[in-house]
Image (cartoon, rainbow, N blue to C red; front, top):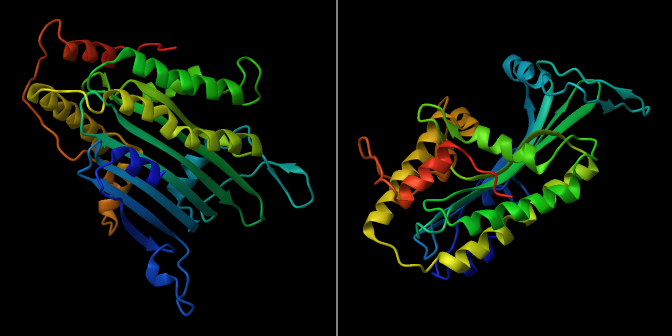
Length: 320
């Protein structure tokens, strides 16, 4: 994926590599004690297409659940079960002190041209193992667009690819997980929402959480990740070299301000990462846009494309 993005960007710039913990190059010697957790942050800045892009991998191994986290997870395990060593189905009751592991792969690509939407995506897994040896795990993830100008056919094409993939893995009215494109699209709209402004961050995509981890759902999650670039690259090829004015660039920066506003105020991962002193704070903030603007009480011109975008952000459309 890194190579594909660098190729379509065609600036000659490359993703930097910042590794820590288990992935730190200094931990690869034979005498080094392996670190259980770690991650890699890759960042491309100043590209032709991607003004700033970040690809991040984080792996947490053998963490210990606090009372607060255990209480949160208890609400997720309803209706799920785990298989004990003798093959019997038993309900796993998550509690404080249980061991957990987690992994996440995320991509955020902020584009230079305001006619190419920002692209965000991730896949993740969270697993809890009790003292008795039973375990339970969930998948989460999704992908979505944050456009600055509405090009309807681009948004329709993006959602169309997502719906086709979702319908393949979760046939409408015929799947045991009660999952569908329509449900995941609604979840996306609901999550990426700025309540103080009554605006959604973008035109959405799919968002899923607490999906029981099985072989069939693993296949779905794999297809989600493998579909990221094929769903976004056609928009780049069509619009990356489109001419734009300074006013249109400024509007892009204003909307990026909303993007950062959402991250700081409402994004669960960012809020968690900034709650306490964190040596990896740069990694937490890596999804922030490279340039933003805040104009006091900015109101788009009546009948403008900017006004049309705001109307859709305030009342999400059904694209497919």
